[in-house]
Length: 534
Image 1 (tube, rainbow, N blue to C red):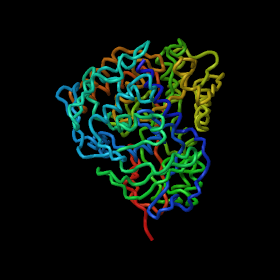
Image 2: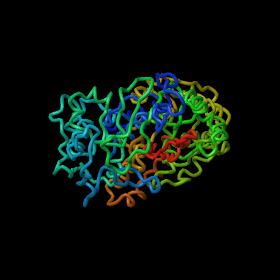
Image 3: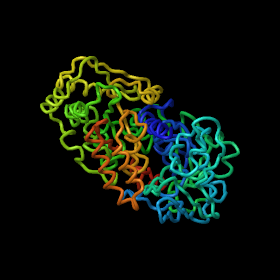
Image 4: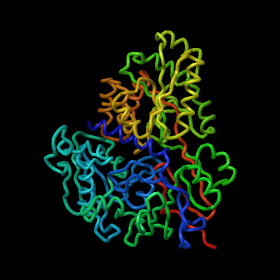
């Protein structure tokens, strides 16, 4: 049950990232700053789903929440390793019992102290099954999770037994098993603290969150229009905001947002549409930045369907797909073809882990396809209608499979985005389908266990793979876990229940009003952005 929640939340991110919001265009605050204060700037955004840290995995929500909250740790963009933020230290002698020391003297924006209890209360709320929060499954490795999420009936408690508040600055966390990746998971927004005031009315808090970060909400969340934040008067951490105000302008589409960026009606766009990337690069010069992201696209197989049970057939599909041609045609060459299950910025990534099975070779693909018995009947390709690019690259794959493997009868099963995840969860897909992963934290475990582990959407089972994941999770150190994760990846690639396709590149553009723009795959770093004066 816990794994099923994991798949749903992760795929929900993928759907949200490329779906439009319900909103309109720019707000009426005027010029490129989007706000009335001289030291203010604006950011293009799609409507978030929630603003409670434990109840969202939407990239758009995360952009706002990153400004409002400090998590226990952050990710060092240079190393991909955890660095301390709200926590002073995260230590363990056995990888199972962890001691988190909280930096003293920090406050929420309402003046309430940030304590170990603040973290425990927030984590308990997210882990409590009846709340139904998106990030519930992140707490499944903490002792007592099962009691908060019984298979049937109501929970017997609303608190994780593995959380012990030792004093105001010390939180002891006991896991169900050693887990070397635990410190890096604490960078995820689900582990942010919440003040006692939040629990008076959680629904109201979702509309007006009180955080411990460098910014504080400024006025009401104007749905489908804008969210405004201002510099927090109580913040004493390392991320003191340089701007007085930031306005998140909510757009229905990235294309409209890009039009406003060109016209100077918005200052920062974090997701320039791929079709506009060449123009943006010429127009903005060094104010256009493309960096490798943690998001991956895959083609999954329903291996529970005997027609797709042969690994050689699945490899033939992989070798018949010209990844480079597709990213050139659909994404203007801005995405990177992949021969690994991991994104390049993840520790343990190997550029050509897949080898021949991910190399475009139509002749070998056809020979392997025939050797595996081929495919008869209608081949259904499944994807959602969340973004036009999905159908574009599925069309390209269909044409390549027809040409290179001789599969004549191919049809599309385009599913409404609202139904796509439930369709995959129910194993209703009877053919290859679009799968996507948006990295939560840079660890092979976040990809491999989440998508290839127990309860995966492919119906794939491999005991050796699961044993290696367990060994890696319980390794003495993060570094010692990497070779074990790589061995597990080799098994998944050898059997190919899901084909790696390409890695997304984050394409960012900003106006000449801004300086200090340093967006990373882990944070928009809005606190570091300055507005040029004069």
